[in-house]
Amino acid sequence: MFVEELVVRYGDLVAVDHVSFSAAAGEVTAVLGPNGAGKTTTLEVCEGYRRATSGTATVLGLIPHRRQAELSRRMGVMLQEGGFSPAARVGDVTRLFCELHDKRVDAAELLQTVGLGERLRSSYRRLSGGEKQRLSLALALAARPDVAFLDEPTSGVDITGRQLIRSIVRDLAHNGCAVVLATHELDEAEKVADRVVIFDRGRVVADGTLDELRSGHDEIRFRSSATLDVHAVSAAIQLAVRSVGDGEFVVDGGAVHVATLTAWLAEHGEPIADLSAGRQRLEDVFLRLTGGQS
Amino acid sequence: MSALKAQVRYEVSSTMRNGEQLLLTLIIPVMLLVFFSLVDVLPTNTKDPIDFLAPGILGLAVMSTAMVSLGIGTGFERTYNVLKRLGATPLGRARLIAAKIVAVVAVELVQFAVLIPVAYTLGWRPTSPNWLAASGAVIVATLAFAGIGLSLAGRLRGEINLAAQNGLYLVLLLLGGMVIPFAKLPGPISAIAKSLPSGALADVLREALANDGVRPATSWLILAGWAIAAPVAAVRLFRWE
Image 1 (tube, rainbow over the protein chains, first blue to last red):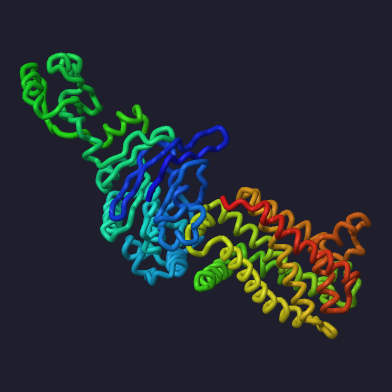
Image 2: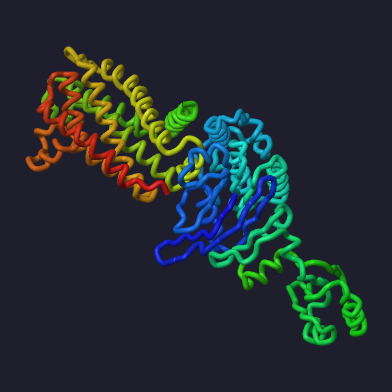
């Protein structure tokens, strides 16, 4: 899937501003960004729902809005929210989507896969937030997709549900599907994505593997007393130090600075715990690139 | 074809399981038919009120399914993004609309299978009924009412659409010659009523089933006009999201 110089305008508002990135088969590409960054609009162009003002999106070799009928046979879509009548029964709607895609997917088995095997006769309105997301994922899987667009798949899902969704997403990619996952839950992206594309104000501000995005940005994390004087530490070790709350601190520097840091803390009688050194978390990369929005 | 069949099956079963839709499409028409046949309070100008009411209520049944039920259901599907989700499946928009029309006809058949025996039980004995003409009128009226229902559903938000469809249903019920004869309406209102699809359908059905139409040829033309204009309006006005 290729997006090249994509622009989408709503009147005077530029929602997507010359965006380019690609997503490969067999990989999970996470599209990250603050609310309103242009993620969903970009996905909607790729799904064929929306036309680009300029630029192109090519999915499975097809221009989505021109060949949506052909694309829809090979595409799974999980909307950000909704897509169901409140009275719709889980079993009925899943059976319907299996029949619409006609890929010999058994609805009961599919619901079992997403952990809704016992909810066949429940109406959509009676499902929890996490169950609704899993049902939405099941409908995307009914297509046995070659490309899957999953918009906020873990939003409102509990820990067990997240693990299940993560494993399904990984399986999809292992089976050769190009999975494009839009989210603003950075830890989810970190756990499941092969590639990350970060959006900010309609533009792509970073695109690469997690390692690529984090390289050159090492950090040391540790816990100490909440009253630790970060300016004093910073001056002593000649590196930027900041508090991230709850007595946790981050030093912009690599493992080579650990000895200096721990020596200073010991000398000043400050406690130290949970020390780790390595590459920046995705959250820090994201905050650095988007100027602290979330 | 299998996608269309699957969608039709889903549409029909959803309608028949929905309590509000059942109330609108079956219970209200049956109640009106039974009540006003047994309690002779309407100025029907017929020896037995059932002779006037039966064709009118069959018309009302068509209106309630093709316009109100379809319109309200589709309006909420639009609000809930159901149409958007279906748009990303191999069903496509054309087959989704086709499925909805087939489902409406299927529900109408169920309505007639209930209403006609009830009318017979209440003493309706149509003289030399022309069922072919009546069926033709039902098909043409279905197109007209579906066009009106989808025009509203495709533009208005869920709750506003709900209110608009129900309000229109009441207006057309009272002005449409279905339970109150045109002759009993004040002059200008009667003229408007005769030009409405509900009035035209009731008139055509009365002519087909009881040789009692007021001006059947004109009513056929009016009905056909609505059957062309309303779907065209729906195509122009409908917004999928």
